Amino acid sequence: MAQAQRQLASIDVSDPSLYQNDSWRPLFAQLRRDDPVHYCEASPYGPYWSVTRYDDIFAVELDHETYSSASELGGIQVADQPKGQERPNFIRMDPPGHTAQRKTVAPIVAPSNLANFERLIRERTCAVLDALPRGEVFDWAERVSIDLTNMMLATLFDFPWEDRIKLTWWSDVAIANVNSPEAVVHSEDERTAELMQMAMYFRKLWNERIDAPPAFDLISMMAHSNATRNMEAREFAGNVGLLIVGGNDTTRNSMSGGLLALCENPEQFEMVRERRELIPNLVSEIIRWQTPVLHMRRTARRDAELCGRRIAKGDKVVMWYISGNRDDDKIERADEFIIDRARPRQHLSFGAGIHRCVGDRLAEQQLRILFEEILRRDLRFEIAGPVKRLYSNFIRGIRSLPVRIVN
Image (cartoon, rainbow, N blue to C red; front, side, top):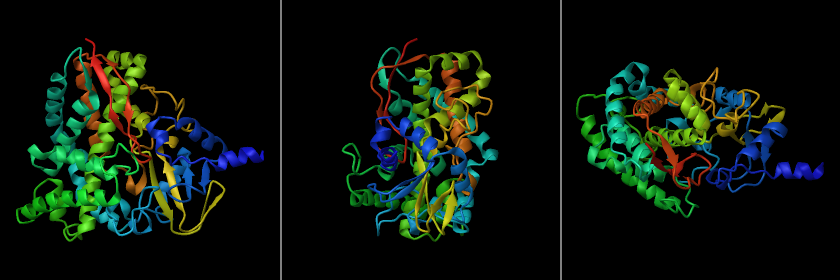
């Protein structure tokens, strides 16, 4: 018994290699079963609590008065922001600051505006799919997922079209684990320098738009809002970075993870070919299955109790969405990819409560159109090489997905 307790106590699910190697499942299954609110005393990121069951994660999400996202308390990742290099933004805020800044950008992805994007997204998706080689190996992540998402980001920002690949680069810089030999930056100083270049580029666009009449793009919306127009430099960089990562990494990795899941579960691919009305279900199941944001962290503002465990003021509390989305007590056969689920939207990938992903419906729209057009062309794929995953405990990313179209 003592040995089992020691083994349980030693589990550290913050290790990025678990997600790069795709070997995280048994550890989270054990925690959900034996220690659903688990204390890891020693990790590279310091001590932290892991919340691993669906309902407990939901409870933490909804209790933002107890569990804070504030940048000054550490922010939203198990890794604290480096001292002196913090990049506050509205996801790293509590109300009322969070509420005011979120309301500034929300209209561009409101359901009432999504219809305006439908034709444009479909035209671009068709062009990308029609340009893919037939019978040759290519990287789906690069040719499809990255291309489609940075085009959408450029539209949201009204960003110079010829420079849109910079958006992908800055997103990669913002989420890079600097301890990985494959990272695009290898120190926090290097990351900060690159993101300051990003801020300088965006500040030029900002200055042009603050002197022009308000327009319906993210830069103009922030420039003309009382809640965001006077941001200091680090907060400006933080909010631009948040919007880039939020609009890029999550959707692009769901596009890649979705195709991978369908290729690994061909009977599900055939089901949706025969029953196109299941495409919205497919989209939700892809987002649950991929869980592109692995975790969100909160910091306890006061002593609390969760699932019988005593959380102390100042403790890190990490909500592992990847685990909650595999909770069999909440989601039937959660370890299986099933597109005709009775409740396909029951997942945690978008978070919940005041911090629920502001662009969730746009992400679903992009995925829906992509798979509608794949099925319209009856494209059939096979995996043509090893999948390369991101070394990260925050973003569940697919760096490379070699595929071949076989028809």
